[in-house]
Figure 1 (tube, rainbow, N blue to C red):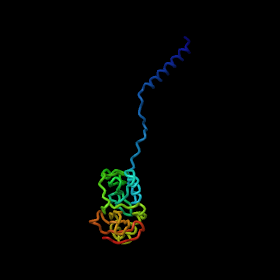
Figure 2: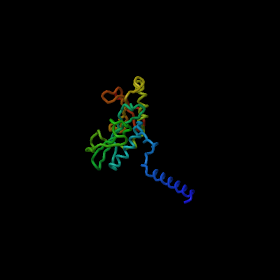
Figure 3: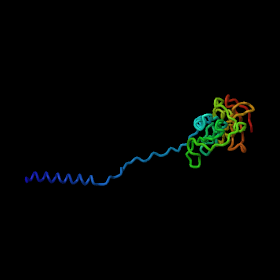
Figure 4: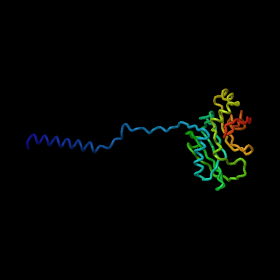
Length: 214
């Protein structure tokens, strides 16, 4: 065999051996794998009407004839409830056809001790149309949102409380007043009605100040 042919053959065999050796190596994990995107844990605050509309859609999925009878916010450590916004909103709906009521919750919190983020619902309960605490109303009456109700309440004593305590807890209760035949916002300056420092009633249709209830 010619010397040049022998060299060519040797080089070829060496290259083939290196190629096979490379292919036989176990696959190595990518050194620069992208880390999983961190979960967004930013709390989401909504006004009453914003949260209410989302829960209303869910309620109509539960019962096509579902009608609301109450909407209430809850102050938390992530949101005191000022400016008409809250992390947690709870709404009650009644179905005359099913003869049940059902509570829905909108949560904008990602904290483990809070209701699950988004919309959740509770168990059904018996509905009695004559019960004044569950008297339903039409959505069309809700023309004034909780942020506007807050502004009205601030003008009637609320501003003094929020200036004194920037973290003053406030919650909002929306319900039908049969005696006045109107939908009312109750703006409650306190964590509960019992320890409230001030409660202001605002017409949820016109936005008019009605009275200081406490």
